[in-house]
Image (cartoon, rainbow, N blue to C red; front, side, top):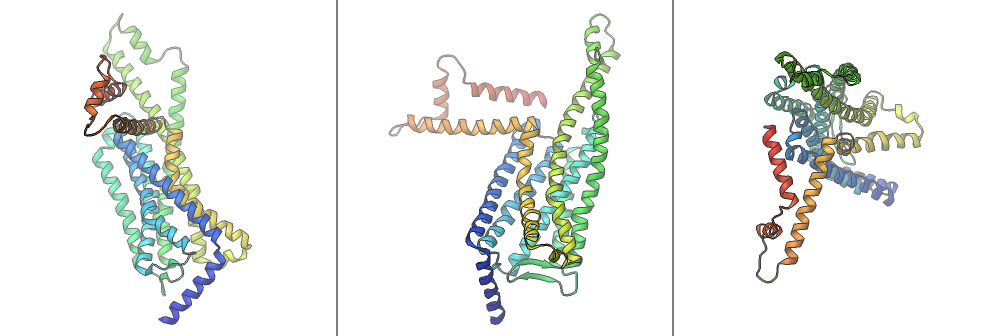
Length: 397
């Protein structure tokens, strides 16, 4: 036992000299930056959906599930990676923590791709049945689908505690890794490639339906008078309920299609980004399991580039990039993010003004602050905004 520990210490000592202080600081700083971006961005996404009633849709509940998987990567996986990097890529936390790290990585990566597959099923339903979508995808079914995603991912990740191959086991001396060819073949197939096939098939159908709807909308907008406008202009002269109902249905259908097309475009970018970030990693994992010496034929700089970019940078970057995509391509999320930032700045400004105006034992409350602002018979703008938002919520209910 002492000989094995001394040998691992010697290996760690040699790796420390090879790793270098500059390399260690650069990699650790990158992981810390991604961790902060991941936590702040995904908490902002979850807060925006829960705060704004307009964003509380079944599709966005699936986005919350996706954001939770990214948050778990940041809070449960990245700290171990930071410690591992600062320790010159030498594992010293024991085999139990190593098994937990492997479990969390498998759980979150499998949950991410399975959530995206669930979103693709939701998109095809929303575009194929825009008027009856809410009756098909109810809140109970949505919660059940999310529970299935996490249960499915948890089973795949929990099977990592079992050794499948002869001589398989978890290595936790110098590196933290699970050496089990048969298990990884199963995990990569069931946890990545199967959901990926479902995702690609569904989105090929989604784009076909979306293209058809886009052509219909183009025909409607290019026509001289839309069916809805026709019934609105003629209803006073010849009020026929059939034309009114047809116009309202057509207008409702058009708004629903436009909304779903915008959401589909944003989620297509999210899915494409996920495939670019994770597909090379799983292909490399498959190659390494069946041909461990294949990468040795590549030049050392080429191996280093493949390891850093495809097995390290892109998978980490994917967990933090989704909030940036939402804010760039979805106006509803962008508006919600701005509202959260303005709300936070307003509260901070109130706190500062309250501290400056208070002296001695005086306590200037928020109510007193509002009363002082309303002495001239004018209502602060923030109250008007809150009242408008409350009335909008009441109308939407």
